Structures are given as structure tokens and as C-alpha cells.
Length: 288
Image (cartoon, rainbow, N blue to C red; front, top):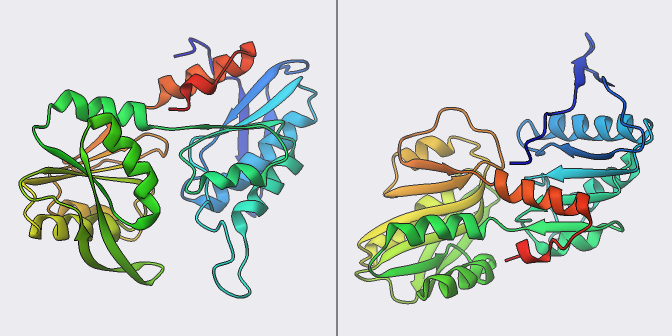
């Protein structure tokens, strides 16, 4: 959407697996944007980003912006048990140490992660892209569903756009990758339910929520998320689920997907934000 060619960069690996980078054009005094989602393989993607940032920092640009459509390690944002790390803060420190002057990212798992940085952070939302898709579908009686209590604020903003009611799935998590669903708070009977979440990892939360909502009388269930991590057999679960359709964005590159999964592009949104940062104009109008 920016009508710009990608810069030339040689990213390579040594025989022992170490990552090497050489920038193949002059960037001195330039406004540089390094685009890299820290998606699976997370550690390789993150290390590539840090090394690229260091290479650019040493090439004397006027400003260096790390563009992370997906911010990896965002779920490790607090100490919820004794003797565990706050890795989202560690990643923030690493990005700054590597040379980033500012960060552009989308739908952080916890918006408070912006406070982990001592540099400017522009935090975009995929909501305009996703809501436009569902509004165009013309659903007769939509209800927006939060798959857990942590998603309520996000789901409420979607419900306001749709002028729809809000429901919540009461969820109990037995382990980090295993979810036991409990019951639905709110009315979903006879409605088209739209489950809104920021991220799908193993798919357990989304699939179980769909089953519970259908048992409570919903006509059909749609799923939606910004970041499709799809780990641990998630695609197989989704294909075998009761979801009529799952809407994701392209913040994470995807292989071939089942027919019921539809990908919406956020390239235009990111491109507009990059242009506004470069021109030093307001980015706040995109924060909706």
C-alpha cells in the first residue's frame, strides 16, 4: 500500500546455525522500518529481528522503527506464579538494546506491554478490518462472545460497533494448553454468535467455546482472531469443530489453510501507520 520497493538485505546462516545479516544498500540518514513478526519459529524470528536492528543501528539511519505485526512472548506479561520470568518485558528490553527508536505493533495480548518500553510504541488494532467483514455479511441477530473474562473489553467494543448484545464464556484453565469450559453468561439462543479473541494458539479455547455456545441454542457460530499462531494441532481441531467460519488476519504468515478459515489483510492499516510515522503526522486516528 506504500508503493515502495523492499530494501535489499542478505539474511544468511553459518554452518553452526548462527544468523548473519548484511544490508545491501546505503541507509545513512534514512527513516528505516524493519518488518518482522516474531511468529513461529519464535526464537529464530526474534533473533533475526534483533540482529537486523543491530546491523541497521550501526549503519547510521536517522530513525529505526521495529514493526512487529505479532509481538511474540506477549502472553508472559506478569508474574502469575512464583519464580517465573516476565518475558514480554525482556523482549522489550532486547528490542531497545538492539537499536529500535520506536515500535509499531498490533493487538498486544495485554495493552499494558506498551509500558514496558521507554521508547514510543504505536499500538494498532485489527478491529476495523474484522468488523467491516462481519458488517458486510449482514447477520440478522448477532451476539458478540468473549471466550474468557480477559477478552471482555475487546468483545464489548466489537458489540458496540455491531449494536449487538454481549455474552461471556466462563472458562477454567487446568493447564497452559488445556481448557475446561464451564457455562455461558448472557443470551445466545437463536443468535449468530461471533467469538472474538486476540490470539489462537492450540485452538482449544475457540473450539470449546463454540461447542458450549451451540449447546445454549445459538443458530451458528463464527470465530475471529487477529493472531493465528496455530500450534499443537490447532488447524485439525478447527477443521473438526462446529465453527461455521474462522476469520483471521495476516499478521502471521500461514501455510495452506482449511476452507472455513478466511484471512483478512492488515497490510493497508500497517502501511498507513508507517506512512504517518514517516511524515510525522497523527497515528491516533488509526487507534480505533
